[in-house]
Image 1 (tube, rainbow, N blue to C red):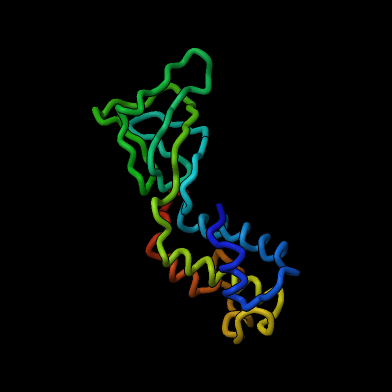
Image 2 (image 1 turned 90 degrees about the vertical axis):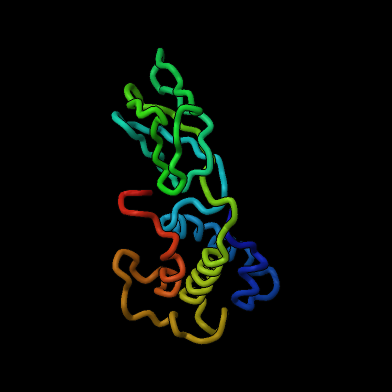
Amino acid sequence: MALLTLDEAKKQTDVRGDSHDAEIQLYIDALTAVIEGYVGVVEPREVTDTVTGQGPAVALLHPPVLSLTSLTPTEPGGAAVDVARLHVDGPSGVLAYTDRSRFCGGPWTAVYQAGRPVVPPTIRLAALLLFQHLWRTRNGPARGGGGSDDYNVTEPIPGFGYAVPNRVLELLEPYKLGPGIG
């Protein structure tokens, strides 16, 4: 699911008519991966991953996690893990046994719901601003939102180059993944 609708994106950049709809939709579809690379899964969805680990905890790969559906071995002959025995740390996606047992065996196929129950307005605003910025870098400030404050980028943001403006990163900051997550 996309973070923005076609109508929201067109309104943000004052694009009228439908001659650019396919191109705008491409930008919208690309936004989710960029935003989620910084803050984790946003729109709730089912995820299936192969996870490994031995010891007290196993980390799922796409936090935040809303719920764990199943944890089954990928190798024949292994037993599924009873998910009722596990605690899921939602923000980090870390699984641990409630009785302090240890994980052994694996790898496992994890099926879970990732995302946020409600998309925070700040993340939606960041998506709108990122769309506006990317649209203007392709089409110029005259076609999409007025001034050129972040269109004429002169300083790359470390780790992001020119694609993600500072104002978007500042909006996403309260939701960013912790070190080693994601």
